[in-house]
Length: 268
Figure 1 (cartoon, rainbow, N blue to C red):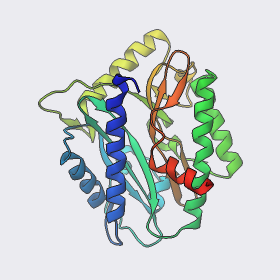
Figure 2: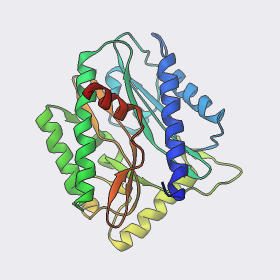
Figure 3: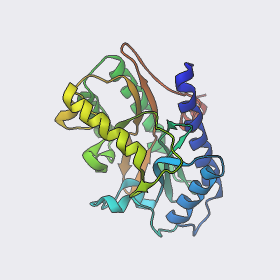
Figure 4: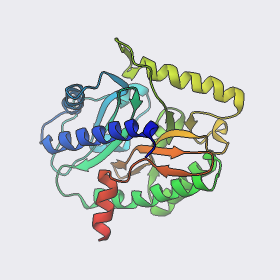
């Protein structure tokens, strides 16, 4: 692996390690806010001082963004976890200037519907990579994901995110002594995304991968945090991980991730 990417892989693995550790501690009665605070504390104890965004946690039908209309509804609430209830942990720490953004889906006990959605996510990971390698426009790949979800019988829930994004670019963040955040997002990371947006607007590309016209361009080289999000009958499931796009190729930064191991184990 190129030295320039090693730090991104390491912080992505750290974030997934955190998600697995917090998931293992979840019990009935734990709230979203408690889970999100525990994830933040876990990462801070391991050296994280900056964020693309602070940890989120969603339980029950909130994993499918049921009724979400306002940005404030994404923030953790006092929703309590119950047996059989799905959950998603989403966190984006920055470590040594390298950014990650991950999504971890789980369930507190058996839930066959959750298992089915999780298995069906695998096809989306393959579809996204294939589309990028074929240099299809980002907007077209987004529509391909939509069509696959419809064939599977699911709803597109990443459309509920701001601008309906399925992915966004990440980059190195300048390290500072103080790293404030606004509305849960690190100011340094937001500044970098804004600069990309200005430069991209001038050059005909966008750092946001969305269903809108501004994403109607071929894949732009860089690191993209990709998060296809399925929803069905109050259950939401997603993964989020970094995709490396070069001038001529694309590949997932790391295949040693929980959802990939889960799929490979079920196929064995």
